[in-house]
Image 1: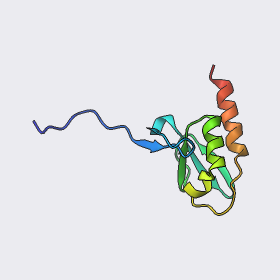
Image 2: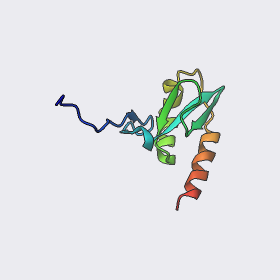
Image 3: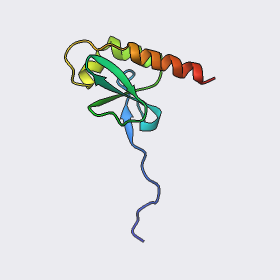
Length: 95
């Protein structure tokens, strides 16, 4: 036996809002397109991404800490209205 296990490790990322580590599948990827934070649920948009829990609390903390411009290496403030709309739609869809 080689000592290797069959179970694969789950990739982890850090939420830029609450700074907690979580499984990549539990977090929402955010990408900066022009001056706007856009959610990337499939994880296929090009560019640098930041991860956040899909909760308004974590998004608010990230905005307050100015974490999105820092994590996405963007100059200036990023607009989060599109991100907030996507979170509202997701909250309504899940009971």
